[in-house]
Length: 105
Image (cartoon, rainbow, N blue to C red; front, side, top):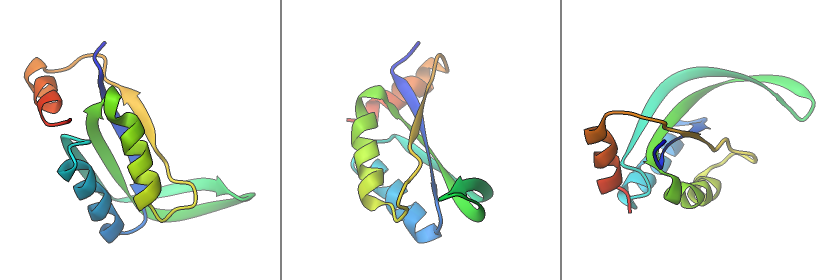
């Protein structure tokens, strides 16, 4: 088990995606953010089934930065309830995981 995490969030616009991704990397909360464009999300919201086109952000970071990332997403995001979930990285390339550590505060 490592202290590295993948954080997932979705955004409804390219502008918002870029703003959040750049903020996280520039402020050293994340070493890298991958953007997967054009995903289709189907979800229940306020009692109705909704569907929308979104972009998925895959954030590489450490467990220690998760609270700050969560706060940043909440502040920068336009959604009333934004997704922000962390997935633990059990193992991986030692060199890559070291690079993540070096590029996050």
